[in-house]
Length: 467
Ligand SMILES: [Zn+2]
Image (cartoon, rainbow, N blue to C red; front, side, top):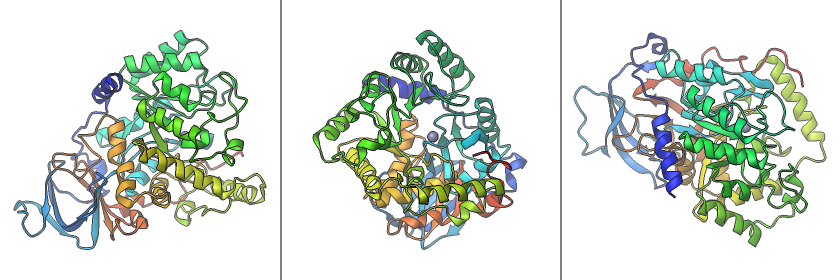
């Protein structure tokens, strides 16, 4: 579609600039070694295109870009390149997280600790999908760009926009004119995306979408007052969370009213005509859907909860809040039945089978941490029925395309940014290999995950938490 094409082009212009931060002393402590040119030899490559693994490959990186890929037996490595023999390893594109807030519940800004955890977990780019502290998010974005601290490239999102019933520090424009002004102001300050939240009213949403596109920005939404169909008709670029937040199937919803989508889910026929019609519309309108299975899983009592590695990073206050919440979840008779999770997964699979564009993000919160949640989200896509190469495409190349960066990153391909992850093991055969991060390469800089994680224990979340 012409509109989408234009939006992509303009967003490209608005993307964070890539600075050469290689000589900034602040990141040297986190590097495995300094190098301008590297050859990764005898690796498997899952390139992010969705195709099968290429085995016994050599990948050469020069000046922050991927300069060569080919069979190890025939690829000539430049003399000056540092050579790393890595049989039994898989090279993938850096993960691109598409629902990766820089804050946690209670609006605690995470900043550098999250930036390091993302990078250590193989996430080299994030779109934040709503900010709680816009200035802090912009400062973090700029600090990482300058190389003052390690972290992923950030596409910042303006503060959430919602309606009169919305909570917290979110913005609640009362007229379309006010909404347009906010969009102009935040675009000028550096917001690349806008996030509509659950109580946004239709006329305000339409104004935000229209103005954002005029400014070359994109709009996503955690919807409720708008159905997915309504938002798609308005030209929204992206919708978060999948079927769990779709109010399209509620029998008594009135215009602009936020109703519970959950009660209807158990009865909804995923194979039925209503769902099929919605998918056709989303595909036709080129709406991206963001899978957030990691945070969704945390609402199901019988699913794996609270990874030990994540708990170890949390502050004591947050650990206690987490344990309290776990007890509530286990005792709560209204915890959703496990079949609902299976339905949410089936919806995502069906959407992709119909030609839909799916991306992925963890929605960090509660006990889903940045980075860990991106890896878990990948595993859950595989559980949902995607092959590891397909799930990786969702977590990399698809996301880059939604960000207007399809030719810059998100794939292991010649000329692309050297944003790569070296995993120990064969990811094509085992989704859990996504956790075995040995090296993270961002713009050609080779980071050591152990150095990035050093000293982060107990630093996630506030020291005091009100629940
Ligand atoms: Zn969120």
